[in-house]
Length: 270
Image (tube, rainbow, N blue to C red; front, side):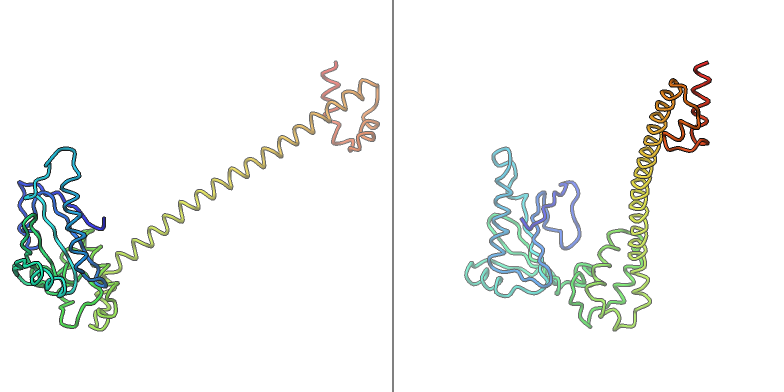
């Protein structure tokens, strides 16, 4: 389901205008600025709310009065509201700028039109679009952001708005302010990149170290095995009474290389 379900605690009433109708269970459909709210979208989400109410462990566990539906879209859905008013004879009340209540026998329903919202009461939701118009006060948005720039939620929303409307901010000669806003984001990305590089470098280094250790171990093993074999061959030739020069010649080794082993075996034999 392309919906968000919020469980609101009953003892904590919401005073914000977009959440006044909220109860315990609230189904929210949010349309992107490029999309529109169609007639079928309305009934699809309405069906989701019915399914949510019924899909519980006990009969009538969720009461109808505790379920609300909120539709959020950027532009005014004229065809939908004409359908609801003229064909369904539903009462539609304008609660305030950009907020409409749709009267229904089962659920409390509201429609939020972002483009119509008041900047005084809903600045952030109104500006959460890629179509900021020249009439919108981007300087006010920047001032509001500066008051909350240390809060992750505001940083996230502002980054989305700026990237979706970068040209709009530049046109208003706010490049310096724009750079300040984005600095945190880029700094975070850079630090994350460094950290990832360090982590990957450490992994590569450890793997190279393990491989180098394995190679050194194999080399040492080969050398030790060769020394043991050479020692055994020298021991057999000493038993036959051969001199160190003869042994070196037969084993195709230099006298200097086998002399320590030769002396070692003679000492043990004594």
